[in-house]
Amino acid sequence: MDANASLSANMEDYLEVIYWLIQRSQVARVKDIAEKLRVSMPSVTGALKTLSAKGLVNYDRYQYITLTEEGRELAREVVRHHEVLTDFLIRVLHLPPDEAEENACRMEHAVGEKVLERFVQFLDFVETCPRGGPEWLDSFARFCAVNRTAENCDRCIQACLESIRKKRQAQEQPPISLGALKVGQRAVVDHVDGPLSRRVADMGVTPGTVVEVERVAPLGDPIDIKVKGYHLSVRRREAADIAVRLV
Image (tube, rainbow, N blue to C red; front, side):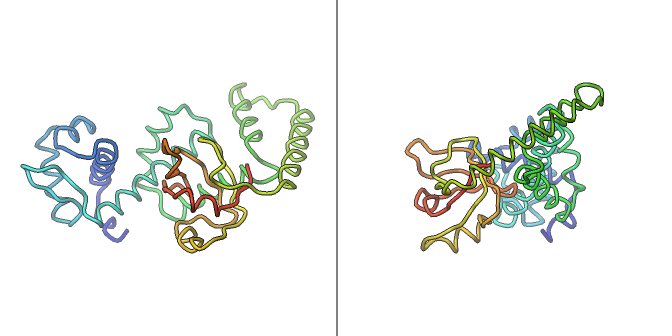
């Protein structure tokens, strides 16, 4: 992200909006960018000229706006920052989605890569550690909801022990294919086999990594997953070689 060193938070916002407009509508126009960011069209034009000079967008006043290869990579990183932070604020701190989005927008420009990775690692750790898990996070939500009055600790411990027992039983079962997961399910990668294992590993899908299925194409191929805050698409034949265990 060397290009990001001289890029302001405002310019990062433009890249992010252009990226999502292209993802969702295949095109990005000055008018759409202005509406999304709630700024004037002349302001958008000025920003596009700056981004074009940095080699991040292809801009012509008579054409749709597109991202250069470098601009696309940088935009993906900005989007990842936003989504990792939003995910953390919603799933760990249990903030309402709109409040999480608003705060993530402010935080994404200031958080460094190492800190961002720790957010990802912490969330994976909590959800997979026998002493943590979704139930532990739900307990925190209840703790916040009742004005910081701790609930019955004995009952909480018993629930935790029961959760650990169920997880151990699940771990004793043979792993299943990533392709068998339903949308919304999360799992930990157990192992990766097959001729495409190297490509899959290069995508970040390695043993111990938490993956989440976000979307399955109508015909079952490809499968969209989230890994370490990145959105990836894997072919069904690749998913068949990825063995996972449900979180």
